[in-house]
Image (cartoon, rainbow, N blue to C red; front, side, top):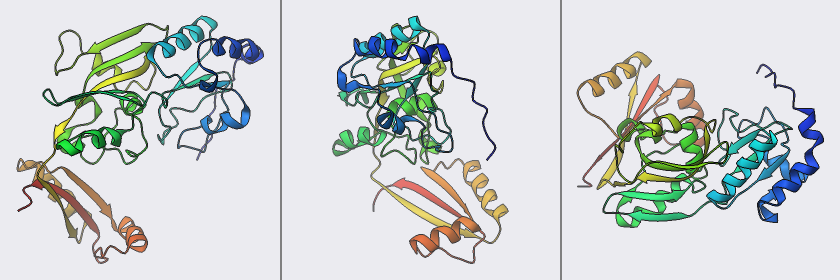
Length: 299
């Protein structure tokens, strides 16, 4: 992997670190401000651990108002800010620098409201992806976007990265499943966009904010769509002697107007690796596999 040339940190900001920390300490509870080097190290990278930088400080607010206060202060002081969800991303988006303050949403982890009549849930940004489904599954509902890290990744991070998952083939990615946001702009202003239903009037600011990777502000709450769960779902596995035939099968399925919940492809190397680990009984003579999940009655 080639080295990434990081810009040089601002020495003037680093020199003012004691004063900056004192200012942050006035805005949040003591356990919400991390300053010791050993405690800062878990925040020096996301899941892309090849590149690491220990930040100036980490702040873990509990409310939208605290996020606003910290962003307003950092904007006034000229201190760079790095928003952070759960840090599960593999692309380095949450990698800080030595002159930056990381603002994490992990303490903002409440499910605020569930509205089954309108099929929405309002949640704080630190709620994990899978926790939304966990909160509604007993009533026969689920939250559709399902990144591979859904057990740990936060809905705030999903919104920043417009995360998808295997089920996005049928149900769409994050932007197709968010109807409203509360967020804080980089100057500390709190705004609400969208609403509690699809297609809110006015400009499509949701489309601008979702996938912006925290560059325009920090999401603190989201109103998400919850969907009625299917009666049943079953995976079907097909082996192919050539990868080209697997690709043609995908095109034929979509061309026929059939939209499975998910279709996943494995080449021969992936088949061998997975079989060696899981002993699932994959056909080792196949050059390619398609695993297709279909929904329907359990009958």
